[in-house]
Amino acid sequence: MDALSSKEEEVRGAKGLPSSYGDLKFTKLDRIRRSVEYRQIMVEGHKFRTPHFIFRWRVNRVGIQRLGISVSKKVGNSCARNRVKRRLREFFRHNRQKLPSGVDVVIIAAQGSSSLETRETFEELNRAVEQGF
Image (cartoon, rainbow, N blue to C red; front, side, top):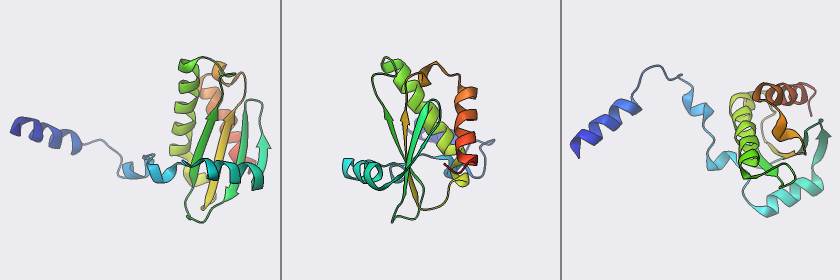
């Protein structure tokens, strides 16, 4: 048991992790989790569309950027949908500083988004953020 504890400590204290590693986490606080919040964003929020994604956003009371993701079965099978969601979360984790503080963003994946490579997905999302979706 003690060997496992010391091994865990080695892994947790591993060198090479960026000092801002905590900033790259995607915790429960970073997510939009309640359907009521999704509905409010859909009804009251602003809308921006790219060829493969629809952005809905609204100022929140929390004061931090939060992300909600919606990927329907029209996008593809479960493997494809999960891949799209992983890419969207990864983009958000690395680019949240580009978003205004205190904003809830819901990204809705459109048909064809699963056929994009990771690089293409990130380029499309970067263009949307730069345009101030």
